[in-house]
Image (cartoon, rainbow, N blue to C red; front, side, top):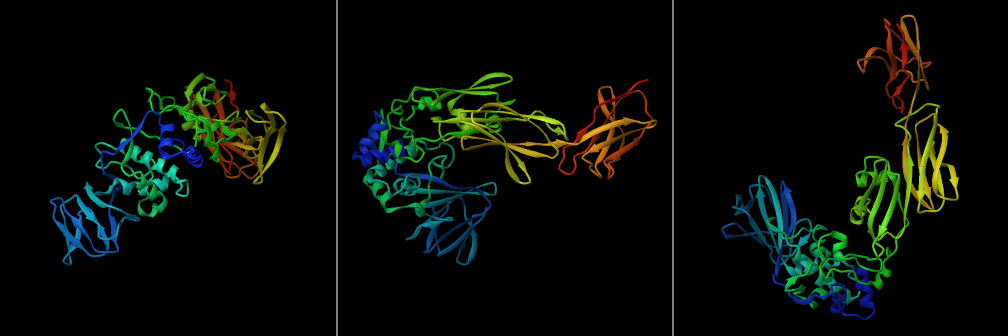
Length: 484
């Protein structure tokens, strides 16, 4: 179910039954098989503080109940409570029972709070009536100010979803967050949402006598997607694509263009080499079925769902996607030497390449059209470039600069220079031995950017390596070969 779609249908006069029948075709309303759920509140805590503004009670594992005064109860791994003025450990798990007011664990919750110990860590579970649970869920998932029929549709969908997604073997049924549904307890409740829950009390969606997996989401873009297209696997008869004409009410009904940077794409999709091309293959609905990703290793097909998740996009219904790619030619550029900044813009008009200078982004290349480009420059300081197109701000790529290191042979030494001068930077002269560069001597760069290492020179290959300093990357000279 699209929530904005449900709102639109409700505004247009549809009842909640009609809304549910549209988004979950083939389902029918029926009674919920359970009346209580167990929701995880805290897990693996060293201690817990449960409070109540009125007297409350605690029950141990044997069923014996003890009265507690109003106020805070500090619970540790021994499950101690104050009874008759004495701290007394109880056999757990223990159950805290409310008085005339809800118990509080950071925020108030209806129902009981069960506390168990594993090792020396505590877990708290809220055992609560299903309808009371929904009172803390529905206004957390849909604005309570929306049309009552939309809220009623949400209440049935949330009730069905909760029961269809109960966990097994966990000691609780549901998580309190998006792993199940967002559950805010008493603090989240709203009388309008509660009225919608009461109006649909105990009703769930059924398909072939089983509780339907009533998936819901904010916005569809105009047509929902079939579950099989999103998650793969077999078709689900009631989770099929349906028209959603009122999705246009959503502020993100159509979103884009979205700038996708080469770095984000590589990380999100786990690519081993730079992105060289991207092509989207769409479903008839317009959603992305497959992203064809091209790198130097060839083309790779990525499912629309994996593409959306990897790039952290709102949806696989990508209305406009712009790829902005910057390619750095080498790990570091030598001081004062020419460097080519290459890149590409697709899916957006124009391009602007900016360079960060003195903390300010300054345009260095501007074109009316997108496509591939090359920018030639000389770098004297570490810098960054940023690509933009069509009002989009794309990736930022840092360009490290290494000092330019030159070496010269002397009678019994190797000397050299470093530009820019990096006084105090460590220099190591290395000699190639059996395919390994081994240290032959070291020195420090002086104020003029020079260095000299005394050596007993023998035939072979030598080079100088300058350690990173003053924001510059490490530098390596050309190889100096000394003949016999």
